Figure (cartoon, chains in turn purple, orange):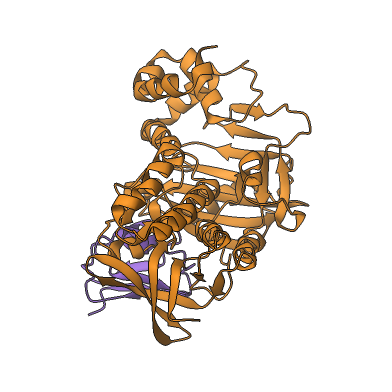
Length: 58
Length: 404
């Protein structure tokens, strides 16, 4: 189940979210972010995203 | 591409390219991989660097130097300005780079030294056998390959996965990262010989706004705020407020974003068959956010130790400890000091920042160094000396000329 939404039109693919993900659920693949099933919806990525491109799904 | 190399370096930023170049110069068979299709792009950096340190690693080339800088102007929240300019013969102490060209030039250096370079090639995992990292799983244009190596160097940046794959926890807490946004702007009208810094919890909580000249009428106008302060407002929102207020007529030619590790040294940057360098090893400076020089220094050490270890036929942590010891006693020492300063800096209120700036009125700086700034602050503020006493001890211990 995908637990976060990355707005790829806002995202600057900088990878900051990947660096703070405590479970390693995110990956920066060239110019987009991929999320795997280990995501716990903790919201840390959404908090620190420089451009506010990430939304945690409720 | 072969299926086996002496060394595979993951990531072609300054750390990776210098590591690859150093190892290749020593005669090792090196593969340098970069997941992006263009090395150096997108930029995730304010692009400022010290001239003296840069010269140690690469011959200067005007193609990637945008501006010469001779000083800094630092503004406290109430607008008090502290100017620090270097009065050395011949002028400038810093450069503002064009990273897109600079990073590619560094990768080219590694290619000239004999390294193989592959772009659009991403590491997807490590090959680990008998407790040793023995290669990298890669994806090149969607095709998967196993590349075996005696040693792997992880230079995969703030988003590093290589350390985690090998069991080294490099994840950053929000208070361990500066979240940054930057515009390349024309029409700010700044003096191109200075870098500008704006401090204040209203405009840049636990961080700062910078303006770095980029030549002609261009400038990098950017902001970093501590991740723990980000949330309801993001870095880009603070940047927009600053730019709307200060440069309503300037034009935006580029948007850059990025996260800068400010955690200080990670506990461990080696394991059997693996070394981490640059942002992947959290080698960026916790107070300035600068990382290029530290990355290049660490990259050079990693390349040298790769050669020593492979020559000995022993790539265990015991041998690789030479790398860990080398960077900790050099760039690591600076990082540790900066971390102490950062931990104090992020707690300052705007009132305290103003009072510190006022205490420096009339102080004549003839250098841009952080140590000189701190020294002046210590002299004027006894409480700060107490807050930063552990730093003071370090400085007295290592910088013999401190007490003049």
